[in-house]
Length: 119
Image (spheres, one colour):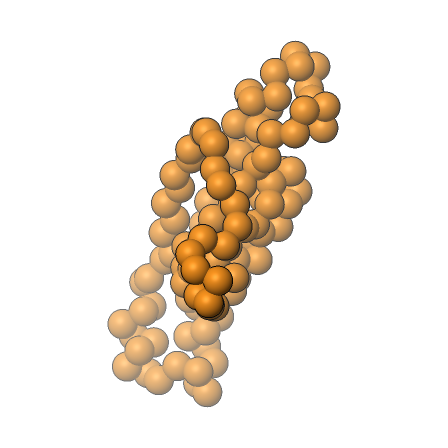
């Protein structure tokens, strides 16, 4: 998960996005519309952000595929038993992406005493 997070966060930041929250192996990332700061030659801010996010996710998926399977973990006997290694030998990471355009509220939601350890 850490390798996938590193790839995902790197591409998100490079494309103008912001990693917002990780929950296990799920990543919430955002591209914020800020007038005057997200401009391209057409001046269409929403289109530029949509294009940036889509291209970013394509790069993330490509890099994860190129990172290969769990071979590096399988070679380390201190991490992986032979039984696990044989069952994971042909395992590859899969990635799904969902894109949404619209309003979002950011911040803590709930009571003042709620503790959210997933930040």
